[in-house]
Amino acid sequence: MGRKPNTSQLNLQAAGIKSDSYGGIEVDSELKSTATGGNVYAAGDVLGRPFLASTGMAQGFAAIENMFKEDRIKEEGEDEDEDEASTDDDACKVGELCMTGEKFDPKSLASNPFAFPIGVWSSPEASYYGLSTQQCKEMGIDAGEGVALYAECLRGLVFSPNGLLKLVFDKSNGRIMGVHICGDDACELIHYGMELVKAERTIDDVLSNLYSAVTFHEMYRIAAMAAVDEAGARKRRAAAGRAVASRNASGSAKE
Image (cartoon, rainbow, N blue to C red; front, side, top):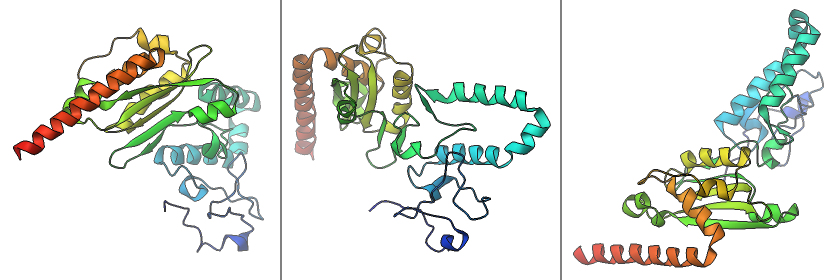
């Protein structure tokens, strides 16, 4: 099931290029492969996960930057180049992790949950950014969850009741560590969640915001409310479930 790099017919071994068990080309932090001549770079789906156009473009940009790094240094001057590289690094970091730019580390894409949002354009859509509760626990973070059902917001109840949005947060300070969504427009909604995580926003920050009615973004506040009132959240989810079930039963009876 799933996808894997289509490299089996490229005879990579003849050029000294190593690949992993799935066929993904192995590269270093400059996206340079193990080719004997040291002149073969790789970017995009041939590296393996996440098979996203956005990350492939970032890798391609970084690979080209590294291919012609020496030429650029000669043209612009070494001091100026170092200043620009430093600026790029500052712009692309999330905490201590760098996403793009000259020093882009492609290996982080499979393991760095802060490098980019993941989207699966299935039906329903699924998307996530940041850490899961399990990952938090493995890192020694006492994590909690706040869950909102699509059926709990007006837009979801009317147009698409099946789905949920989950906020994973650090219980010690309320900082949002991850966002996970399954339902309509999940791959669009995740970008707001990404900004919450990157900006180190807290559950209280979300609760203090006002979200427009009849939008899926209301679920962020509903999930934040669930994080601070678990008992009340369970009752609200149960009520939303009953409302959806009643509506479905009514629709079936009319048919």
